[in-house]
Amino acid sequence: INRPKAKIHKILMVVGTRPEAIKMAPLYRRLKDCPGMDVSIGLTGQHREMVRQVFDLFAIKPAFDLDLMQPNQGLVELTNRVLSGMTEVLKDFAPQLVLVHGDTTTTFAAALAAFYLKIPIGHVEAGLRTGDMSQPFPEEMNRVVATRLAELHFAATEWAADNLRREGVPEGRIHITGNTGIDAARGEIVAFLDKAWDRENGGWGKSKLVDGRRSAGSSTASARRASSASASSCSAAA
Image (cartoon, rainbow, N blue to C red; front, side, top):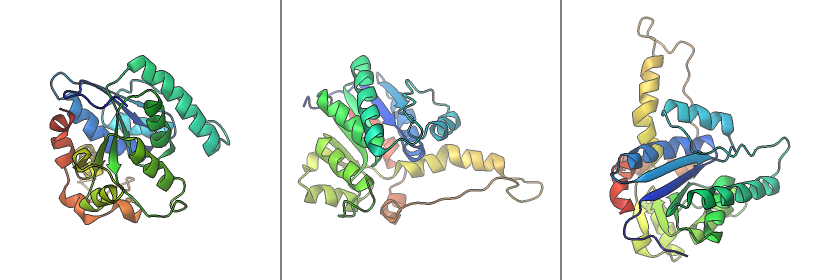
């Protein structure tokens, strides 16, 4: 694998689902502000319309859209299409670093494509574990394999970092960053809710906010570290 150089100037971020898009959006915008940084973000289409909604909210224009979903498509077919599609995208963009997020099929297959092409991988929200490959399925496998493929591991909490250490990830490759989903909530999502509030009648009108997460992603430690991820992103890329 070509390990990250002292300076990284060209980064490609890959998302497939709405949660990935929400959590990667503030990081993308922060990296775009870094002097001399060439950053692109695109989607595989795993949650195409929902990701587009998030990109619209954050005023992000994707560099590519693989639009891979098909009727009655299973995990094998989706994985194959993401792997094949991302291989061509990576050859075209030739990034110095690929950033993936979490534990989706997009995460797994995009990381695998980058690994095959010897492009270093950064894994955002690394280190979540249940210790049971069947719970959640296939997410536990996706994130475990992503750890094996990644060069840089961005953990939201000390607990997640400890999981990585126990698996033998070198300390120098682990960066505790906080949960970028909280950065998103404090930015555009708060602004959106502010606009949705009906000040005249003192209610939400037709707008509703629902927050649902797996327990592994809801640690209070993530909240305490909020905003540190995007704030330190330029220095982490150096």
